[in-house]
Image 1 (cartoon, rainbow, N blue to C red):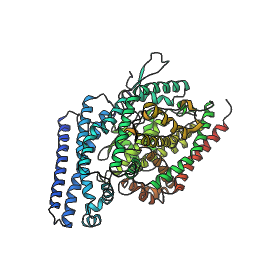
Image 2: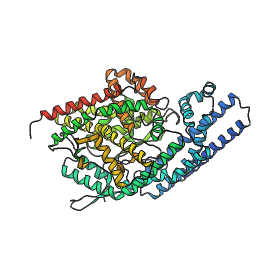
Image 3: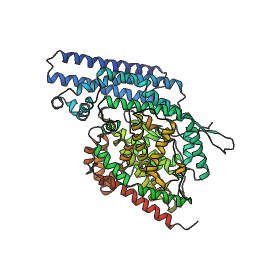
Image 4: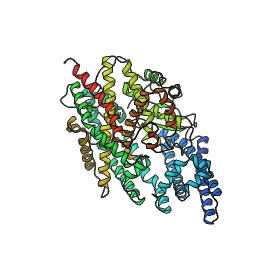
Length: 605
């Protein structure tokens, strides 16, 4: 068991509702269910009127306006209630009341999805140009309408779509919940520990950044043992989810789950190919970085458990309080609006930073209500921990900029969802470098390269793994050994001999929760897109700061209003051109050159 930290904060959601069993929450949850039914009834009534014939252009526009306002109100309320429940489940998966409420929420969301799908199908039958010309609400939702029109062509029959939505809580959502519960409750026993203490997986994974190689190795070995114990259940969940996605993609007329994912990401295959071509071409540079890091650590080759090992020495303590102050201060160099949002997040307890049993690993930010978000982190006192907070605060700032839009206008694709987070992370990185002495500068430089290596090299391996899983899952379920083999093969294609192959991580498919997010196939390449797009934007910021600032917040508030290519073109970026992605990767290559030069210049030990 672990002792809770007295210094790391937990988030506060009491301003939303007093508790999950409070009358206020119960009333709003019931009202949401009533509103879902009312939306369905209004949709039925409109369809009945249209089937009777003689519906005018004005009547169609009026019906659309009523439905779009109802749907936006529904989505606003559902977002807050779902996030409120998630605020309990994600920090304590053993909370039975929260799990029960989440199950009820999944059932309610399934009903909402049924009516949402019917609404999408109806929008697909409309004369879009006439509707937009006849309705200011339609004009304001023009991109949603365009997407709905395409989406409507990839729908099954109404009864089939209703059945798929009705089964989601006991299929995809159930598999997702199983994986989350398994990994959040998993305890790891480390060999060699004096008291053989059992630690939460999130705590053990934080030890990957420990300066002591023996500590890192013990944590790695303990993690593999613990993950092996739950791998059969995780394999069942993964097979179930990927099998469902394959069936639905085929029935809905998508060529593959990847085609559906690209549509959801608001990019096309040409953009993905350009991105991946540039990323694959950069692998030799990242392998050079990994070999240089091995020299810095004095080992023949890096082991997997050396990937997050620190290189360099910090002359300051990056505790939580100091990190919060640093973030607010550096965000102010960009704009008072950004620093004000960060200050508010720290002051109003938006952040849950303490690693503990039952808490979900990793980090994320979720929109909660209006301009408010909540951030989950598993903080470790290092610059990397501060950088993670800055990253998630970037997501919160993005949510803040989107708050002026309706929920349907806020529907940001996963590709653009990383825009603000990468940008904020880069602000902190450059600020850290400017203040650092030689030893700390090396620490920060390597720490950033370490993260970028994960987002390029490891993300490519995850993408290759998921491609292979989908291909083989078309025939049958895959065993734990087969999944391990596919993961090792994917890591071999990206890391190559720059890592000791005997220490690859075969169970990374169990760790990464993104594989288990219902109906989010290929939740990996968007991180690569986001990193390189964010670096490209930062380069433009450095070239002309004031002009960039005028456009940046407008970009963030518009990420649900146009395709990624259209939004990027506002900054002179062509995301279908490999050259843009190569230019962003060249920024990383320059840092690798700087890191190698610094290591080569160090006196021999």
